[in-house]
Length: 67
Image (cartoon, rainbow, N blue to C red; front, side, top):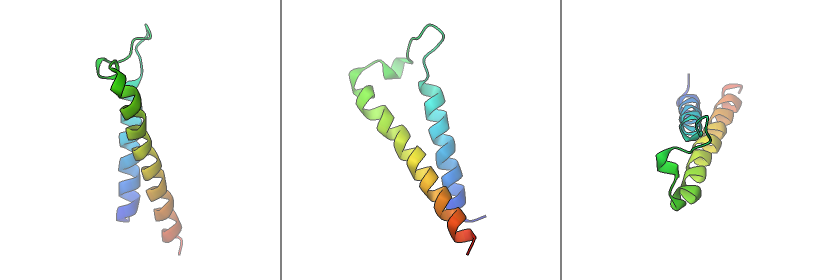
């Protein structure tokens, strides 16, 4: 397997982990680290960086592997 494929898979796993960690509990209470105001600005872009970057690396690896 190529290095791009591994980077894509690991980045998508990190994004999934960040999404799972950021979910509120059954009562709708957010995790403690997401309760301050700056988290609304910082956390979503962090998740999107790993999600989009991982998807791009995965697609690039799959397209170059078919050549």
